[in-house]
Length: 94
Image 1 (cartoon, rainbow, N blue to C red):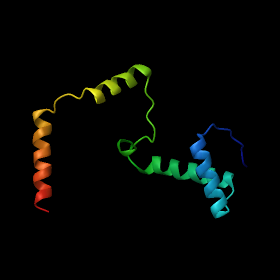
Image 2: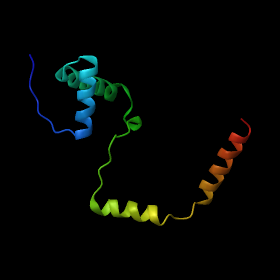
Image 3: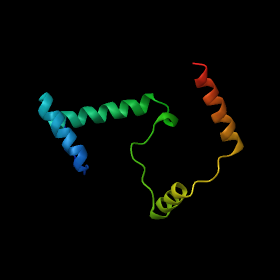
């Protein structure tokens, strides 16, 4: 038994979906159901800590903090400097 659902998607996603549907002759409903099935299967099989969200939603306050951090970066810690020295040393030997 099939159920109809409704969802809001970005204009970009809609354009991509329509292009794929037209190019490959796949109905949009089939494409959406297939995409949901693949996504849910991946969530089931891949450990949660390895799932990276495709979009990050920030509050206005958090967004302002990110902008401030980008515009006024802090000095790297000694641990980060050491890590980068090791990383660059490894690439020099390859």
